[in-house]
Length: 136
Image (cartoon, rainbow, N blue to C red; front, side, top):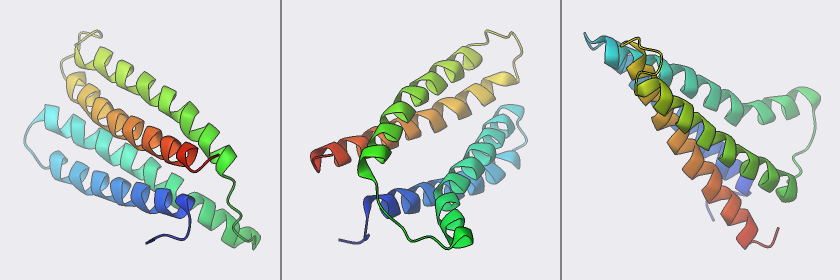
């Protein structure tokens, strides 16, 4: 086993996704295309938030000088709720992408939200199922 806990594995993988999203987003911004710049902007913002979520608990424990105690029941509930929220992100991204707001530059923002929301939906659902299979 590469990771000592599921929480550590989730944090590591979410941090990697967040950093890759930010790097990809910066790359997209350099395209001379408003659509790709909008996708890049979404990747930067979502990547930053994902990275903060990944490292936040570790920083909190370090500041408070607390030991890590894994609570898989609580984590499972959070992941299940997040899975449904992620579906909402995808729907909102689709509404933006199809031009509901009738502003063309938002289509790229919509695609960025769809991609990020889809990743998180798969990610959160996968880890919720993994925890459930462990018997929690």
